[in-house]
Length: 264
Image (cartoon, rainbow, N blue to C red):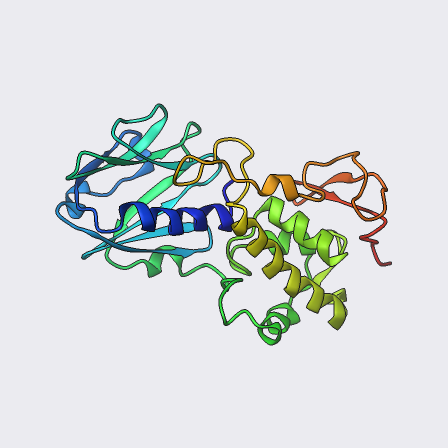
């Protein structure tokens, strides 16, 4: 699933490509992908891009287009409708912006107010508000298992499976640890690792596992820097112990049991 870095690559890349273009309409090729009236966007110009968690927000003159890529979605800008396109927006210059999603889970909204769609999301981990003090407050009343907590979009927005595994590995924290057992030093490490791993992934254009391609059709390169995710049985980069895989909260989870010891 595209996570925060992959969506952010669209935010920055599409801003350079199509900001200022004027829409003339569009359609839902897969009806469930977008149930809104495409006439709403007619003659509206793209004025900017934002992101909340894994949601891409395209700001128009009067409305906003919100796109969630879900499991396998990507965004193509092209002059022809790609295979597996579920939604397309047409521009006055003859180009199209398409949600391409062979599993058809991705969703598109056309709204005047973005807040009802994204108000459930937690704090943005790259925002100025995400301070160590604020992170400690967020953890104060939490007692659940850390891996599912990091994946909880109402806790911190934008973290998915590969980011969570890499964050916990860099922090030296076992994915089954309970949030209320963390020491102050571990909270500091976790807070730092959340920002570090996300920024590093953004620097490499995100990660491509299946279908993700950036705005210019380029694959994300952060997969080359992954330390534990999908590295089952391979030697840990730090201690050479084999990377383990377990299921936590119904998600495949990768870690080094030597570096990330489970406290009794």
